[in-house]
Image (cartoon, rainbow, N blue to C red; front, side, top):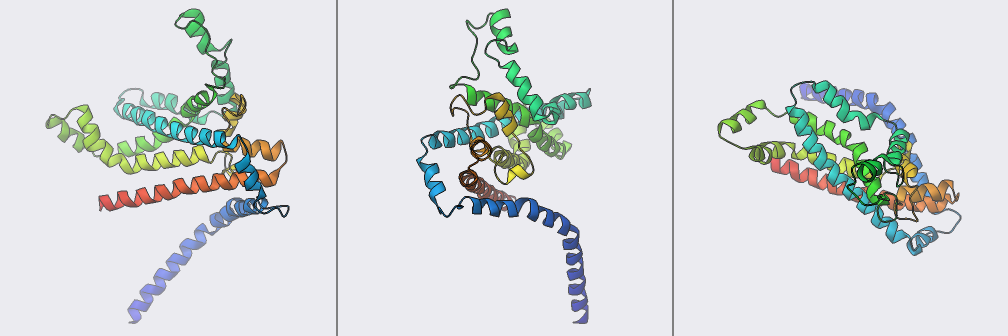
Amino acid sequence: MKKGKKVSKLAFHEALRGYLFIAPALILLLGLLFLPMVKGFGYSLTDFIGLENFQKILKNRDFPVILKNEVFFALTVTVITVIVSILIALLLNSVKRCKNIVRALVFMPWVLPEVVVGSLWRWLLNGEKGLINSVLVDYWHVLPEHIQFFSSSLSLISVCMVYIWRTYPYVTIMLSAGLQGIDRGLYEAASIDGAGIYQVFFRIVFPLMKPIILTSVVLNTLNVLSICSLMAMIWTMNGFGIINILTAGGPGVSSTTLPMVIYKTAFQKFRFGLASGYSVIQFFIIMVFALIYLKMTKATKEEEA
């Protein structure tokens, strides 16, 4: 009985020590993330108008377009980024020579400042003097006329393309780490059995990488959705800087997402209550994806068990 009490007391002290170690991080998280989030909810109901801010948002004629842009932006960037990252991770895993140089080149978009990325691609995609148009139209004569990448029909697609280029290294790092963790003996056994490259991928690589792929999909989706939202504004403004430099949400609202609306409403129109209302909507969208992630992660663990 005394031995059991000593063990439980020791476990309690170890747990307490662990909580004390993470206490500074928890306090910082509380002060920089959760308190502003709660305050944002409060701002959305300011000036004694209750739910009027949300009524204004829902009555806004541009809101359905903005919401559609948000969903299209998040899904397009996430799906294509993960597919591209899987291919690049497989390529990096098979590189034998100059591996460090190749990795440095692959990961370069992630380390570049967003101002540089936005400015670079604004020049590359310029409808008149951009490098891409100059090469395709003026030098190679592949196209009859210049592509207006920032027109109302192409602006959102252009933003998605730039953001994919910006974020694929982040997902590639996660997938590369997972690939390196796969036992080389499995590849050798598959090769001896005469398995082709597709069979190796779908029978060995994909099943073992499924948890990492799932994690990267959801994290990338949350990252895309949360750019410049009330919560994520504390730690990053990923994507917002790129959109702001490339199109500023235009023409009209053709490339406007919720983060752009939040920024313009709060810091250009100074309507902080209404901006907080948009942030609350953003918060619930993120929560839906987070809950889906938790459910899918639980299902994956049950399959592995």
